[in-house]
Length: 210
Image (cartoon, rainbow, N blue to C red; front, side):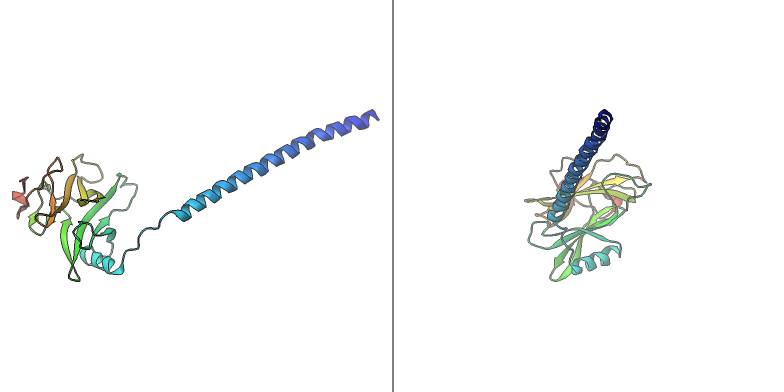
């Protein structure tokens, strides 16, 4: 009879541990399910990116080609007119690991009486309808880091940093914004306070206050 009691006790110990591990597994499984449900719920409530209208996408492709990407559209200059910002974005690769949005060409276009007109172009240089923007590099630029933000009062603010190959040239960003006085996009001085005049020739491009 003593052997029977000892055997029963020996069997009870593994059984208790088994039940403990089973309870722990159920608890952890329940926590994982809660986290997964929470993540799914957050993804479902995340606002969707605005769909680019077909008309705007077609206009961007006519200006920059089929690989153009519309980055933002709407009343960008806060002047009541519809505009879009589009670019040829360089995809991320092992040889292109620079931070930010790297582009080769950029345009800002405006809808004027049902037709899209180009207001600003960035390719090898920065240009508008009047010529080359102040502070644009004299040497041709093959790639830029593009930053942009919307200001409720001043509208779209653009910052172009010229790059050299796949390494950062450490140049300061060139600020560009809509000038309501001249009614065109112009570059800003280094303090980003005053607009600069354009030049019809790249050789004569200089920083002249407007």
